[in-house]
Structure formats: structure tokens, C-alpha cells
Length: 109
Image (cartoon, rainbow, N blue to C red; front, top):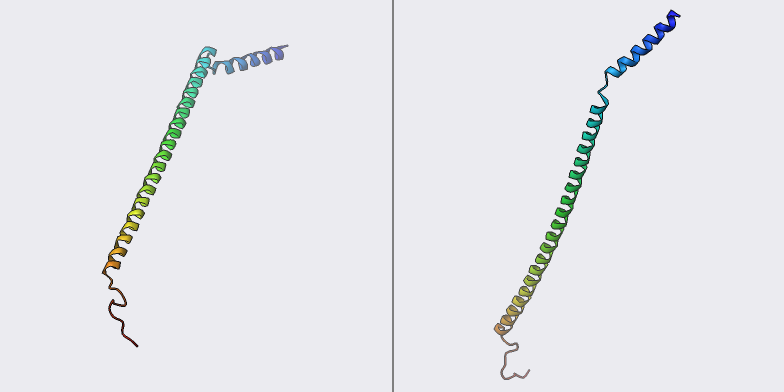
């Protein structure tokens, strides 16, 4: 019978020793709640960051589109000016060229 009492007392001590290392249930619950709030706060911050990144990407795309349109407009204007300059040069060259054969009486062969 002494052996049974000793076994029971060891089991009781074992259960007591494992309980003494734990935090009281109230503190553990508070710690879990605090950790959950911190996790939710971090998730919200990540969502905000993702939204801000999407807004930035959209703004960059709009700026790139506007730059492309402006560049195309400038290139088109440059091409139109180049064509006008070429016509003007061609007209001046045509005016400066002497007629060939020169006007005048034709000589017989």
C-alpha cells in the first residue's frame, strides 16, 4: 500500500510542477488578445501599403501615357516642320536653277 501512496504523490507533484510553470489563465488570454490585435494591425498596414502601391503604379502609368502622347505630338510637329522646310528648299532650288536648254533661237543641226 505504501507503493501506491508514493505513486500517487509523485503524480500529484508532477501535475503541480507542470502547472507552476504556466502563466495564470487570465494573463495568457490577455497576451493572446494582444498578439491578435497586433496581427490585425499589421495586416491592415500591409493592406494600406498595397493600396498605396497600386495608386502609385496607376499614377506612374498615367504619367507614362501622357509622356508618350507628348512625345508623339512633338515628333509629329517636327516631321511637319521638316516637310515644310524641304518644300521651301525645293522651291528655292527650282527658282535658282537656270532653264535648260536656255531659251533662245534654236540652231539648226
